[in-house]
Image (tube, rainbow, N blue to C red; front, side, top):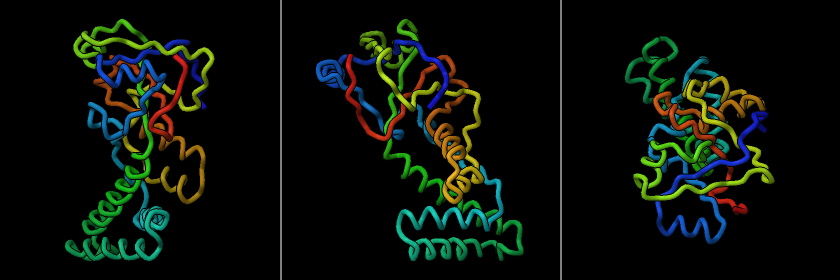
Length: 220
């Protein structure tokens, strides 16, 4: 849970359409898929390799085992080893080793995206009177802005967007989370995946309310 104090009211800029009418009439808040943002780089961090290939293999094996089973996991890693031979022996050649690690990291990234892609994100703004937000998210000023009163509502995963944090997830953090069950590493991965944004978008300053479901019922 974040210790940051948020405003008692947050806002959602919307175009006037059927979805918005349903939001108002049914008291719903839509949690969008991370793949549906207007910025394709949102919730799309890179993977930073900061371990040796043995540790990366163990990480991928654990993630694949949880996803498709141990037998398939072993076959997939053996396939990556075979593919890396295009450049030589990854145990001898630094070029082949680097290529092999990129193959492993790419597979890790796909599995992470698959896991987190099942979650939903609700993006809210701190102010209702931002002209750029009206232009970008409220049908070029023709829409509306919905106010959410949070004074009596608790969101455990409500956090501000971080425009300064690195948008790379470290392999070492994934290892600490997946292999060592570190809650702090898990939190670091979550925050990088869901709450970091390129600095060029700093003008928005949106808190993101992230949850594991695609929609949530709240009182308006």
